[in-house]
Picture: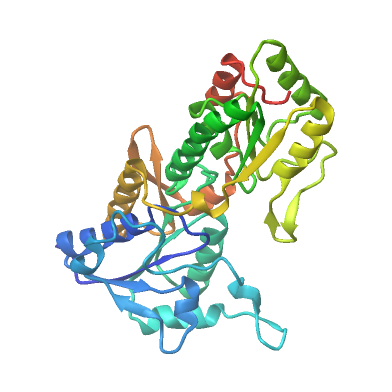
Length: 356
């Protein structure tokens, strides 16, 4: 057993399934193996900015019930850059010194942060400024963090999208409709390509591959000629219009590409269309077994890195095992869908229309 340590843990950025499993794994490894004291920090960096600090001592009885729960027990936020934090008077204030002070006030020896590439970049910068020992765990339903084959949350999101396609098959066939399923994917199409193949979609549109309305509608017409009276279309929210315009709910959120496509398809092909937007249902609910496994392996490995004194590193999944890589490397290598990847080749081999 190593010398007694206090390690903090927080979840940052958007929520997803599997975060609680990672928290549970960190607590178990810290207490069972090393006899350390794990401290949970509420609402990501906001908890460290609060006075008194928003934190709680984590125990095994407290976290054991979390394994199957969605969301995050510790809460999270993806609002307000700590280096330019919006204040009530409209000013932007650098509050990173408060976060650093909070870390040291808690007497922490290390911080385990669970987040996507944006959150991890911010946390890393703060930790470097404040002399804070930092280990990262990747999570994102988009699965776009570089270096790792799996990030916490993606598998559950794919499962939910696949189930939605399974259900839409029957209503699409019953009414001879073109059914469009819009799924999340901030800049990458991993959810759409994976769920589209698994769910038997006829069309998969992702931001990495261009498309035209004419070719899309031609595919639908060919299916009609062949006696296939319905079409199932899955589209990533980050797909642009045919003219290259971003479709957004507001200046900060994608949304609406499904309805754009429905209008165009109905006008050009005559097909009756309906749209389903999954939205945040992809983030919620029980984590899949794979997300629980990945999160548990990541949590254990992160604590081991602290024990070994290996900081400024992120745990990652490669070739069926957990490794660690420099955080800088992980967040600099953005992982979009490769148009030459196995999944893209598989979709094309199944006759699925991808656009180009």
